[in-house]
Image 1: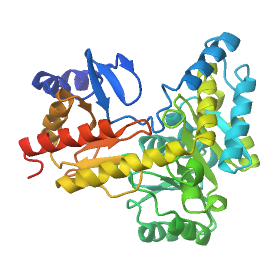
Image 2: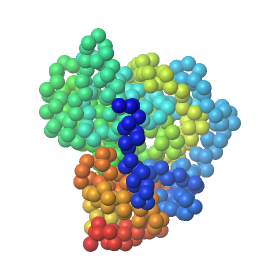
Image 3: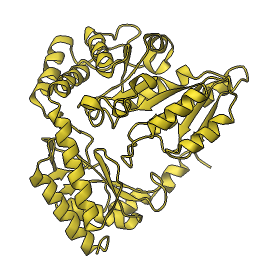
Image 4: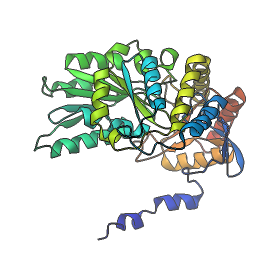
Length: 404
């Protein structure tokens, strides 16, 4: 056996490419937000997480340019040593204030943020209690935590999982853990695949009953739900009940990086103990400046959130009215469940050829029967874009038998 046997034996992607229905890694040549250029053609983008449409905003682009002029292209060090700029400190202050928490810490990517929180806070003999449908970044953080615990003098800590967004099952799972042991409940705020919003009120009840803290991943919630786009806790008026909220800059904030907000003592502990922070180069000046400019716009132009949600609701209603199976959750993610891998790929190709880009989610990324075309929307989509997307979905759905 050779280590690379699995690589040589992997032919599925090449087979799909040969069929002409490969939906991944298509280079975008130009982007103005709701419309992009791919393979020399203008395509309506209905799969981006650029929720407020700020990646093309002049103020965001100018902020990045000015940051490069002032600080250069990178920081050449970790935050712990030579990689902290006054920009980092200012954005942390601004985000903590925006989210209503004492302090904030930036990480270099959104995916890395969970790895900079979970295995740092959850020590041997302590527990992570995680939703089965949590994002892969949380799963990675959980796996690191489990490995660290197993190596620490034979002591262990455990990752327990509960059924998706099922707070009765969460209580069943957590009630079997030692009551005195510290616990961290971790969940997406808005689940990235389905757009579903976590049942936070019942989660808070369980957490307080069983001596647990709560960490929410609000990557798909900030700038989308809550007062002024402040996310899931704000959506439920439970800001003081959520202990940590993490987010990303790659969606609403039109940049790259991640962050967590919490009590000052918690952030201070993470700053001095998280390997994902200490051993990673810090976020680039352009990334931080772009995110800060996006935060300025989010705070000063709340109409963008209203427009975003109007767009998503129009699309959800329109797709459902055609007969598609559409997840009903009130977020910017609108999945169209097809339930068959081959039909998803065929529909993706037909949509792309007709000038609409969506995301194809197939197994093993989703369970059998949940294969879907995941659509998501922006505040900068206009009715002409949305109407074309609906028209194309109608024509292609009928042609391929997805709807009658």
